Amino acid sequence: MKRMHIHLGVDNLDEGIRFYNTLFGTEPVKIESDYAKWLLDDPSINFAISTRVKPGLDHLGVQVEEQNELGELRERMKSADMSLFDEGEVVCCYARSDKSWVTDPAGIAWEAYQTMEDTRYFSDAQASGEAVCCVPDVNAQANCCAPSDSASSCCGG
Image (cartoon, rainbow, N blue to C red):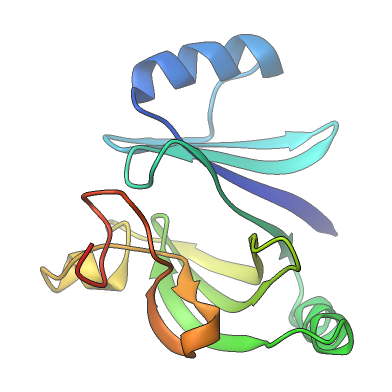
């Protein structure tokens, strides 16, 4: 099964949770001090909000359950004539996942990933005390955030 993923930045997590609880008619499956996630079945969406990124759309993606689905999705991303960045296993958004990234023609970051387990930290960087981010700069082929106006951004932002 594949599930569409949408990650939005919000200024106020509590307000965002109240709004999306009402909109979706259900509570988040995960809440942290800076993050909330809903796993919706109708429509099938992994919807997340956080205060760690600038308000608005941060990135889109497709979450898969099986390794073979991730391989198929990675091949489709490569075939779309996009620069694929295989990030591999990382901790992001309080979960350990195997991820790949592309940027679409409009400049929106898309990830393809399989989640293996929940974690205590937002990212590998947070666990080691470094700046925290999730979306890599696909064009730079390095594990770093895309440029952002956010004060919490890595890459010297």
